[in-house]
Length: 332
Ligand code: SF4
Image (tube, rainbow, N blue to C red; front, side):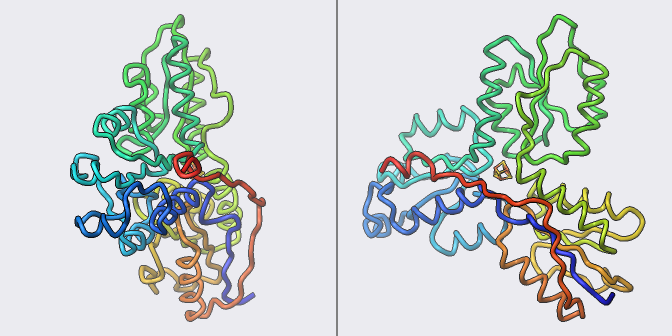
């Protein structure tokens, strides 16, 4: 067999990312969620939409929406009072926000459109339900990640964030403590299994979530890249450095490759390094849940110019998940 590409399927956009990006596009196209005339907003020097934080963790998506007029802010305090008065829509990203952010938006009378992924919203509701029933919640997630910050913010006094198996030893609960485990949606399925085993060994009474919090898109992309890595000498994952699920894909691919080769993350074809492909026959390719397919196409084209012209697709499952647009857009 000659030089070839082993392409993971599924890869790329998940239903939550698709919905979040479509939310901003819909507003940019002049959805009636805008209570002010776009021309009047422009005359006042105001944008058609603000987005709190990166709508999804992909630099190309953010650059593209910025070029179309969306203004990204880190905090709501950056949104001027004139915009609040004019009713400029403010979109919350797919990663969700804490109740404190929602309260701040309400106090300022902001015109919020909440694009939190419904699967992240499910974890928020689980925190509220378990905290109300007297549980302490062990939450496996990444400190500082937008999703983890939002979930912990639902009940900071009852949610105990840990990142790795090594953190379990620092937890201390008495056997009469009602304990439940919840997780971030974009973790590594295999690594989380190790942390869960350590938790169960130390706190045998800990309850598992009603259904896995690691979402379908994360699990499916990891399962596919595992098979791809087994059939490759090198793997390229398209995704941004701050995309949790993309970084997990690199880790899963590296685990599958072992000593045979390396897994690399790129934002686009421009990041490919010729040195990675010396002596490599099969290059595995996949992409994170926030990556537009055109950047995978770019990587495939660039690999083609290096002689990787044969493409084999590895389909491990078919996805048909779809989420409707946020309620604020459907209502108006
Ligand atoms: Fe939702 Fe999962 Fe996509 Fe995150 S990766 S936006 S939780 S579907």
